[in-house]
Amino acid sequence: MPSVTDDRTPPRRPLREAVTRGARAALVPVGGCALALALLTGYTATGAAGEPVPQIEVGAGRIIQSPEQAAAAYFEIRNTGDKDDTLVFADSPQLGVSMLREPDRRKPGAVRRAKKVTIPAHSTLRMKRGGIHVAVLDPPMLKPGERVSFNLWFTGRGRVGAEAMRSHLIEP
Image 1 (spheres, rainbow, N blue to C red):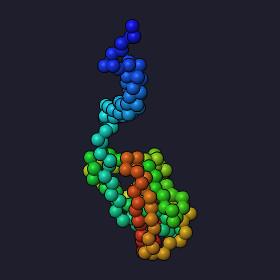
Image 2 (cartoon, helix red, strand yellow):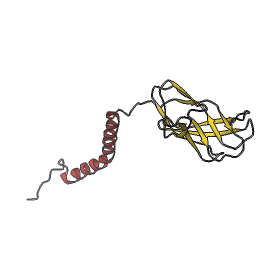
Image 3 (cartoon, helix red, strand yellow):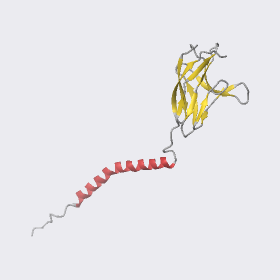
Image 4 (cartoon, rainbow, N blue to C red):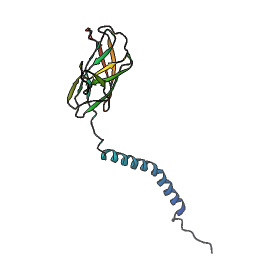
């Protein structure tokens, strides 16, 4: 007698293969989402997420240059944010090599290289002669009123562009 097959029962092998292919296809996006979620959870757990970037404003500066061509730039730096920031470097593409200088506390009347200058939240740093300033090494002779661009580099805010004008006064 011929065997009778039941057409209502689907073959199991193709179903398993389809399920396996679907699971493999879903593994990449689901795995990527799980990895992103784990990284974001770690980022927020460290307390870094949501920290505001310091709000730094640099007022127009001035440059004082002596007859011997030594030059120093002075800026007013305002931190209007809720987080301290640190000035670590200042340069001028137009003038060449420069460095932050500050009074040497151990040697009255002397200056030394300042490695960093902290600007506390909600405060203003006014650079001045005899205090913190940007020393420009071997600058060209500038004309009174000449404007020069500077970059001030902060640990939190990054680069802040500024402009300084050569003062009409020649100070030693």
